[in-house]
Length: 258
Picture (spheres, one colour):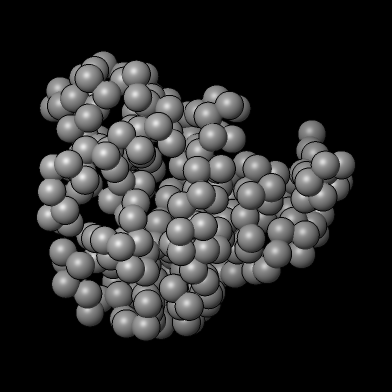
Protein backbone atom coordinates (compact mmCIF):
# COMPACT_ATOMS: atom_id res chain seq x y z
CA UNK A 1 0.00 0.00 0.00
CA UNK A 2 1.11 3.57 -0.68
CA UNK A 3 -0.88 5.07 2.19
CA UNK A 4 -2.20 3.40 5.34
CA UNK A 5 -4.11 5.25 8.04
CA UNK A 6 -5.16 3.48 11.22
CA UNK A 7 -7.64 4.88 13.76
CA UNK A 8 -6.56 8.47 13.25
CA UNK A 9 -7.93 10.96 15.77
CA UNK A 10 -7.22 14.69 15.62
CA UNK A 11 -8.24 17.28 18.22
CA UNK A 12 -8.84 17.27 21.98
CA UNK A 13 -11.43 15.05 23.64
CA UNK A 14 -14.91 16.41 23.07
CA UNK A 15 -13.74 18.63 20.21
CA UNK A 16 -12.28 16.08 17.79
CA UNK A 17 -11.88 17.06 14.16
CA UNK A 18 -11.32 13.41 13.19
CA UNK A 19 -12.31 10.30 15.14
CA UNK A 20 -10.85 6.82 14.53
CA UNK A 21 -10.53 7.23 10.74
CA UNK A 22 -8.87 4.36 8.88
CA UNK A 23 -8.23 3.89 5.16
CA UNK A 24 -5.91 2.33 2.61
CA UNK A 25 -4.84 3.75 -0.75
CA UNK A 26 -2.92 1.59 -3.21
CA UNK A 27 -0.52 2.72 -5.94
CA UNK A 28 -2.52 3.89 -8.96
CA UNK A 29 -5.69 4.43 -6.92
CA UNK A 30 -7.83 7.57 -6.70
CA UNK A 31 -9.65 8.04 -3.41
CA UNK A 32 -12.24 10.81 -3.07
CA UNK A 33 -13.15 12.27 0.32
CA UNK A 34 -16.67 13.70 0.57
CA UNK A 35 -18.75 15.28 3.32
CA UNK A 36 -20.41 18.49 4.40
CA UNK A 37 -18.54 21.65 5.39
CA UNK A 38 -16.71 21.03 8.65
CA UNK A 39 -16.88 17.24 8.32
CA UNK A 40 -13.11 16.86 8.68
CA UNK A 41 -12.04 16.54 5.04
CA UNK A 42 -9.30 19.18 5.12
CA UNK A 43 -8.24 18.06 8.59
CA UNK A 44 -7.66 14.58 7.20
CA UNK A 45 -5.30 15.85 4.49
CA UNK A 46 -3.49 18.06 7.01
CA UNK A 47 -3.05 15.11 9.37
CA UNK A 48 -1.75 12.86 6.60
CA UNK A 49 0.98 15.29 5.60
CA UNK A 50 1.80 16.25 9.20
CA UNK A 51 0.54 19.84 9.30
CA UNK A 52 -1.54 18.85 12.33
CA UNK A 53 -0.53 16.21 14.86
CA UNK A 54 -2.93 13.37 15.66
CA UNK A 55 -3.68 12.54 19.27
CA UNK A 56 -4.07 8.87 18.32
CA UNK A 57 -3.52 6.60 15.36
CA UNK A 58 -0.83 6.49 12.72
CA UNK A 59 -0.12 7.51 9.14
CA UNK A 60 2.16 5.20 7.14
CA UNK A 61 3.42 6.14 3.68
CA UNK A 62 5.28 3.54 1.59
CA UNK A 63 5.90 1.39 4.66
CA UNK A 64 7.27 4.16 6.87
CA UNK A 65 5.59 6.47 9.36
CA UNK A 66 5.01 9.79 7.63
CA UNK A 67 6.63 11.74 10.47
CA UNK A 68 9.86 9.75 9.98
CA UNK A 69 10.53 11.20 6.53
CA UNK A 70 13.20 13.90 6.21
CA UNK A 71 11.69 17.14 4.91
CA UNK A 72 13.41 16.98 1.51
CA UNK A 73 12.47 13.37 0.83
CA UNK A 74 8.86 14.04 1.74
CA UNK A 75 8.84 17.07 -0.58
CA UNK A 76 10.06 14.86 -3.41
CA UNK A 77 7.41 12.21 -2.85
CA UNK A 78 4.32 13.98 -1.49
CA UNK A 79 2.54 16.80 -3.35
CA UNK A 80 -0.11 18.84 -1.52
CA UNK A 81 -2.66 21.21 -3.00
CA UNK A 82 -4.31 23.25 -0.25
CA UNK A 83 -7.67 25.01 -0.55
CA UNK A 84 -5.90 28.36 -0.68
CA UNK A 85 -2.39 28.98 -1.98
CA UNK A 86 -1.71 32.69 -1.39
CA UNK A 87 1.13 34.20 -3.39
CA UNK A 88 1.49 37.97 -3.41
CA UNK A 89 4.71 38.26 -5.43
CA UNK A 90 4.43 38.77 -9.22
CA UNK A 91 6.35 35.63 -10.17
CA UNK A 92 5.76 34.34 -13.65
CA UNK A 93 3.55 31.28 -13.93
CA UNK A 94 6.57 29.36 -15.22
CA UNK A 95 8.52 30.22 -12.07
CA UNK A 96 5.63 29.24 -9.79
CA UNK A 97 5.40 25.79 -11.37
CA UNK A 98 9.19 25.40 -11.41
CA UNK A 99 9.36 25.94 -7.64
CA UNK A 100 8.08 22.38 -7.23
CA UNK A 101 11.23 20.97 -8.80
CA UNK A 102 13.65 22.49 -6.29
CA UNK A 103 13.86 19.40 -4.00
CA UNK A 104 14.82 17.06 -6.85
CA UNK A 105 18.12 18.35 -8.24
CA UNK A 106 17.32 16.86 -11.65
CA UNK A 107 18.84 19.72 -13.63
CA UNK A 108 17.46 22.60 -15.64
CA UNK A 109 16.73 20.67 -18.84
CA UNK A 110 14.69 17.95 -17.14
CA UNK A 111 12.93 20.45 -14.90
CA UNK A 112 11.96 22.62 -17.87
CA UNK A 113 10.55 19.58 -19.67
CA UNK A 114 8.48 18.63 -16.62
CA UNK A 115 7.18 22.18 -16.19
CA UNK A 116 6.07 22.17 -19.81
CA UNK A 117 4.42 18.76 -19.44
CA UNK A 118 2.56 19.80 -16.29
CA UNK A 119 1.48 23.00 -18.02
CA UNK A 120 0.14 21.00 -20.97
CA UNK A 121 -1.74 18.69 -18.60
CA UNK A 122 -3.49 21.61 -16.89
CA UNK A 123 -3.99 23.84 -19.95
CA UNK A 124 -1.80 26.70 -18.76
CA UNK A 125 0.83 26.77 -21.52
CA UNK A 126 -0.50 30.12 -22.77
CA UNK A 127 -0.11 31.52 -19.24
CA UNK A 128 3.50 30.51 -18.57
CA UNK A 129 5.01 33.95 -19.15
CA UNK A 130 2.25 35.92 -17.42
CA UNK A 131 2.44 37.25 -13.86
CA UNK A 132 0.70 34.90 -11.45
CA UNK A 133 -0.90 37.78 -9.55
CA UNK A 134 -2.75 38.92 -12.68
CA UNK A 135 -4.58 35.64 -13.24
CA UNK A 136 -8.21 34.82 -12.54
CA UNK A 137 -9.14 32.51 -9.68
CA UNK A 138 -9.63 29.53 -11.97
CA UNK A 139 -6.33 30.17 -13.73
CA UNK A 140 -4.49 30.38 -10.41
CA UNK A 141 -6.06 27.09 -9.37
CA UNK A 142 -4.75 25.36 -12.48
CA UNK A 143 -1.29 26.87 -11.98
CA UNK A 144 -1.15 25.57 -8.43
CA UNK A 145 -2.27 22.15 -9.61
CA UNK A 146 0.47 22.19 -12.28
CA UNK A 147 2.97 23.04 -9.54
CA UNK A 148 1.90 20.07 -7.43
CA UNK A 149 1.90 17.73 -10.43
CA UNK A 150 5.41 18.86 -11.39
CA UNK A 151 6.55 18.00 -7.87
CA UNK A 152 5.70 14.29 -8.27
CA UNK A 153 5.66 14.00 -12.07
CA UNK A 154 8.15 11.15 -12.58
CA UNK A 155 8.38 7.84 -10.76
CA UNK A 156 12.13 7.71 -11.46
CA UNK A 157 12.68 10.85 -9.35
CA UNK A 158 11.18 9.59 -6.11
CA UNK A 159 9.64 6.14 -6.42
CA UNK A 160 6.37 5.82 -4.52
CA UNK A 161 4.46 9.09 -4.66
CA UNK A 162 1.34 10.56 -3.07
CA UNK A 163 -0.89 13.44 -4.18
CA UNK A 164 -3.14 15.15 -1.61
CA UNK A 165 -5.56 17.60 -3.20
CA UNK A 166 -8.06 19.76 -1.34
CA UNK A 167 -10.86 20.62 -3.78
CA UNK A 168 -8.71 20.54 -6.94
CA UNK A 169 -11.59 21.52 -9.24
CA UNK A 170 -12.88 24.44 -7.16
CA UNK A 171 -13.40 27.58 -9.29
CA UNK A 172 -12.96 25.60 -12.53
CA UNK A 173 -15.41 25.44 -15.42
CA UNK A 174 -16.86 22.12 -16.55
CA UNK A 175 -14.26 21.60 -19.26
CA UNK A 176 -11.33 22.15 -16.95
CA UNK A 177 -12.91 20.01 -14.24
CA UNK A 178 -12.95 17.11 -16.68
CA UNK A 179 -9.39 17.88 -17.79
CA UNK A 180 -8.13 17.89 -14.20
CA UNK A 181 -9.82 14.62 -13.28
CA UNK A 182 -8.45 12.84 -16.35
CA UNK A 183 -5.00 14.28 -15.58
CA UNK A 184 -5.16 12.83 -12.07
CA UNK A 185 -5.98 9.46 -13.58
CA UNK A 186 -2.95 9.73 -15.86
CA UNK A 187 -0.68 10.55 -12.91
CA UNK A 188 -2.13 7.66 -10.91
CA UNK A 189 -1.37 5.37 -13.85
CA UNK A 190 2.35 6.08 -13.28
CA UNK A 191 2.05 4.47 -9.83
CA UNK A 192 1.11 7.45 -7.67
CA UNK A 193 -1.70 7.32 -5.12
CA UNK A 194 -4.16 10.22 -5.22
CA UNK A 195 -6.41 11.45 -2.41
CA UNK A 196 -8.69 14.36 -3.27
CA UNK A 197 -11.44 16.25 -1.47
CA UNK A 198 -14.55 16.94 -3.54
CA UNK A 199 -17.85 18.76 -3.04
CA UNK A 200 -19.29 17.52 -6.33
CA UNK A 201 -20.24 13.99 -5.31
CA UNK A 202 -21.28 12.91 -8.82
CA UNK A 203 -17.99 14.12 -10.33
CA UNK A 204 -16.02 12.33 -7.62
CA UNK A 205 -18.00 9.13 -8.13
CA UNK A 206 -17.34 9.27 -11.88
CA UNK A 207 -13.56 9.29 -11.43
CA UNK A 208 -12.64 7.78 -8.06
CA UNK A 209 -11.86 4.13 -7.44
CA UNK A 210 -12.78 4.47 -3.76
CA UNK A 211 -14.71 7.05 -1.76
CA UNK A 212 -14.58 7.98 1.91
CA UNK A 213 -17.62 9.73 3.40
CA UNK A 214 -17.01 11.78 6.55
CA UNK A 215 -19.56 13.22 8.97
CA UNK A 216 -18.56 15.05 12.15
CA UNK A 217 -15.02 13.76 11.76
CA UNK A 218 -15.99 10.10 11.57
CA UNK A 219 -16.09 7.67 8.67
CA UNK A 220 -19.66 6.98 7.59
CA UNK A 221 -18.85 4.84 4.58
CA UNK A 222 -15.78 3.80 2.61
CA UNK A 223 -15.65 1.70 -0.53
CA UNK A 224 -16.47 1.76 -4.24
CA UNK A 225 -18.59 4.75 -5.39
CA UNK A 226 -21.74 2.64 -5.82
CA UNK A 227 -21.50 1.47 -2.21
CA UNK A 228 -20.87 4.94 -0.78
CA UNK A 229 -23.13 7.15 -2.90
CA UNK A 230 -26.53 6.01 -1.64
CA UNK A 231 -29.58 8.05 -0.70
CA UNK A 232 -29.16 7.00 2.93
CA UNK A 233 -25.54 8.11 3.09
CA UNK A 234 -26.24 11.39 1.29
CA UNK A 235 -29.01 12.19 3.78
CA UNK A 236 -26.67 11.47 6.67
CA UNK A 237 -23.90 13.61 5.21
CA UNK A 238 -25.85 16.58 3.93
CA UNK A 239 -29.26 16.44 5.65
CA UNK A 240 -30.89 16.80 2.23
CA UNK A 241 -33.28 14.67 0.25
CA UNK A 242 -31.59 13.16 -2.78
CA UNK A 243 -32.22 10.60 -5.45
CA UNK A 244 -29.45 8.43 -6.83
CA UNK A 245 -29.52 7.34 -10.46
CA UNK A 246 -27.01 5.43 -12.56
CA UNK A 247 -25.23 7.30 -15.33
CA UNK A 248 -26.31 5.68 -18.61
CA UNK A 249 -22.79 5.72 -20.08
CA UNK A 250 -20.35 5.29 -17.20
CA UNK A 251 -22.56 3.28 -14.83
CA UNK A 252 -21.45 5.48 -11.92
CA UNK A 253 -23.88 6.94 -9.38
CA UNK A 254 -25.26 10.44 -9.97
CA UNK A 255 -26.83 12.51 -7.19
CA UNK A 256 -30.04 14.40 -7.94
CA UNK A 257 -31.30 16.91 -5.39
CA UNK A 258 -33.57 19.88 -5.01
